[in-house]
Image 1 (cartoon, rainbow, N blue to C red):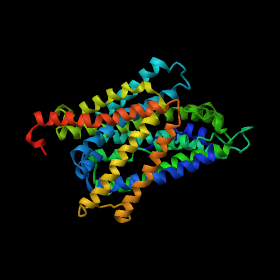
Image 2 (cartoon, rainbow, N blue to C red; image 1 turned 45 degrees about the vertical axis):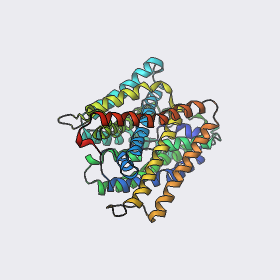
Image 3 (spheres, helix red, strand yellow; image 1 turned 60 degrees about the vertical axis):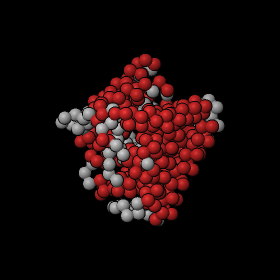
Image 4 (tube, helix red, strand yellow; image 1 turned 90 degrees about the vertical axis):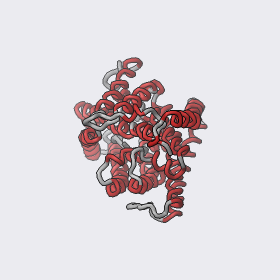
Length: 421
């Protein structure tokens, strides 16, 4: 849910160059991901309920903010999920130039529906598939990195290791690459021993994600590949340059697998939010329907998949800008919930705690918010797309209170006594 390998960081290298890219990939998770991972570890262990961060906000801040948290997350998913099929199509276009326009959209729809089909088989199937895909997508990158380290630094004549100077743009991409920690919380009810496993997984994945991003970049820099050639899909060309056509083909396959793997895992997470809303009476009970054998909420999976497919035409850059803005707002509500629960329910059993007491919790929330403000500032100074990103994202945020009023009316009008406050 957090990372599908280094695919997607190509434009970060182009914007910043190799050295700055490595610094961004190390510093960003320190101030963006580490506090989030700690927060998710504490709250998932303390409140292992379906819906995850929706349940946290509802318990800490009340029904209104719980609903806003769920809506912000669903709105974020509308722009986040199409990124992975879009990335898939961009990689595929490296070997199939015809994968553009309507053909590209058809391929994107195919990826989303294929992920939906896997998810209808249940959480254990998704877990095993994710594990297998992770091994498949990392093996070619490991081979490429080792080969690059064995390549003499002067192997590529005239290489320019410095990239552009758009460091804020690079940070924006890195923030997207390191997002998704809280998504695992929505399935806490379906996870074995969540009190033990969530803290371990959060901190372990943080270390692994940093290594998966930075080590290949350092290896390619050693080989002398120019930073200026990096655009989405360039890993394939780099594989061909360093190891020949066979390695390039292996990297292509791994990149396609990586996009599919992240999309597949996130379907599992996002599809549980409508179920949690339906459990509380804000959506029709139809969304609670589950497969008899798999236990998967197939109605919710299908409805979410259709919404994601509609957003495919927006494109990669615009989607990332809106994605980070909405994700940052989601994250802000989650950290506020963490602080409020520390004050409101000090005796709540917490198998894992963010260190530092109340001050530690409060300080942990500051850095992600500052990074979000930085990303928004970057979008405001980009005249070619800032207005679209801010207007579209702002419109989605503004819909939250309106939808809450409608959902509350629906809830009062026809829900069962078990779903009352």
